[in-house]
Image (cartoon, rainbow, N blue to C red; front, side):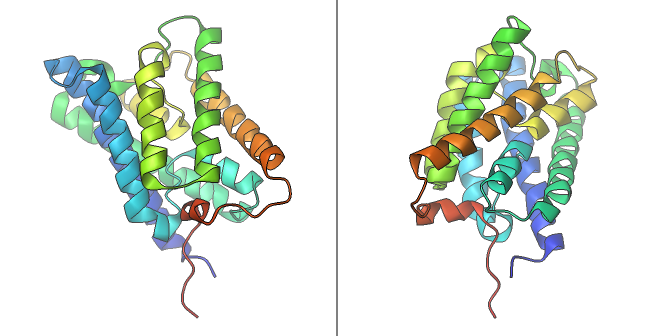
Length: 225
């Protein structure tokens, strides 16, 4: 039996809140002070992901990302009936964090909203590829430090071009609160496409083998009988 849904949803909302508060929050602090630098912002994203997975994976799986929820569902590791509640909780946490950032810092840095720096086609392709590699690693490992490290790596590389979202909820919260919706659709479609590709490639890599045990850190906890 999986974790009770209300507890799992609370963990998803809290985890996504933390991601948006610290990740885009670091981008806002960088825009206002210049104290962190681009690599510092990328490190904050990665460290936040690692901490959230370590703390909340035993409760909800710590998806904190609709693309991750889709990938786990397609891989047969997550019940389809929980997908919409999980995504709703993720979006709620992201919006709440963006409102807190607005209250603390105003609109400086646009609340860390993700916007393409180049063409839409370039941004779409980059977001799909970044999400693909992130979720492939998550499906095959799930270790907090490994997944967090991949997020930091990809934020360092792709952040200046697309914001390196890889997460529709992360993009949705700041977009809603800031009112900046430029090319927002790609921050949904590209990560979801990347999720589908990650599941397909993972199945090709290990068609008849059990998944590594550590990957189960992304699966909701088992309640004692």
